[in-house]
Length: 259
Ligand SMILES: NC(=O)c1ccc[n+]([C@@H]2O[C@H](COP(=O)([O-])OP(=O)(O)OC[C@H]3O[C@@H](n4cnc5c(N)ncnc54)[C@H](OP(=O)(O)O)[C@@H]3O)[C@@H](O)[C@H]2O)c1
Picture 1 (cartoon, protein in one colour):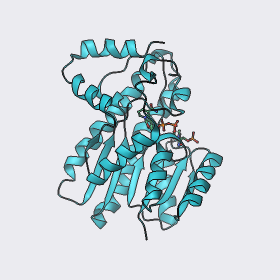
Picture 2: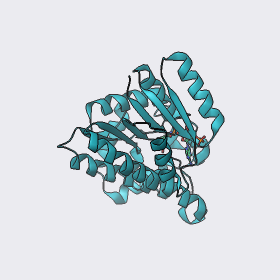
Picture 3: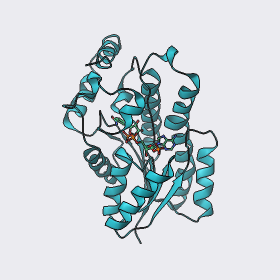
Picture 4: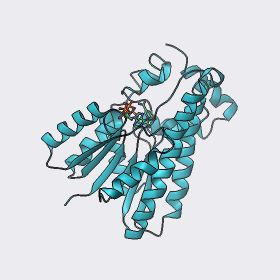
C-alpha cells in the first residue's frame, strides 16, 4: 500500500504536476479544488497512467468553514493522510486600495488561514503516528514586500514564516514541514492574478510546473525547511538578503510594471 497525499489545488498547474510525480512514486491521492470537471479530468488521467487510488473533492477553500469541513470529510471517509500539500492559492495585481475587500478576504482565507488550519488538523494526526510530511506552497514573493501585489506577497511571507518556525518545532520528531518557494511558473495563475505581460513573468525567468514539482518533491523527501526551485530563484533569494528594503520595494514595483 502506497502513502496517501492530499493536495489542495491538485487539478492544475503546480498542484497537478506534484500529483503526477507523486503518483509515479506510487502515492494514492486526494485532490481538492473548486471545480469538479478539471478535478475529474486530472484524476482520470492519473488513474490511466498509474496504478493508484485518486479521490477528488470539489470544495472552495476560500470559504471560512472549508478547512474544517474538508478535514471532517477526510476523517469520515477513513482516509489516513500521510503527506499534506497546501498548494491552492491565488494572487491579484493592482494597488491595495483599488482591490475589492471581498477578493482580498478570500485571498487571505485561501493562501493563509485555510493552509494554517489544514496544517494544524493534520499535523496533530501525524504527530500521533510520529510520521508524516507537510509541504506548504509559498513563493519567492515571501522574501520581500510586493507593491502592486501587496496582499499576495504578505500572505506568502506568512506561509514561509509560519512553516519555517514549525519546522524547527518538529526537529525531534519524524514529521517534517517544508515550504516550497517557486519563482514565476508557467501556469494559469497569472491569468487569474492579472499579471500576464509583467516584466516579472518574462519567459526567460519562468519555470515549468513540472520542474518546480520535481524540486519540491526532492526537497520534501529530504525534509528540507525551505525549497527554492531553480538557480536564478535561489540566487535571487540569497542576493535579496543584502539589499535594503527601501530599494527592494522599488525593484519589485518595477518588475510588476508592463513589458
Ligand atoms: N504560477 C506562479 O508563477 C507561482 C509562483 C510562485 C508561487 N505560486 C503558488 O503556487 C500555488 C499553485 O499555483 P499555480 O501557479 O499552480 O496556479 P493555478 O494553475 O491557477 O492552479 C491553482 C489550483 O488551485 C485551485 N484553486 C484555486 N482557488 C481555489 C479555491 N478557492 N479553493 C480550492 N482550490 C482552489 C485551482 O482549481 P480551481 O480553479 O478549480 O479551484 C487549481 O487547481 C499557489 O499557491 C501560488 O500562489 C505560483
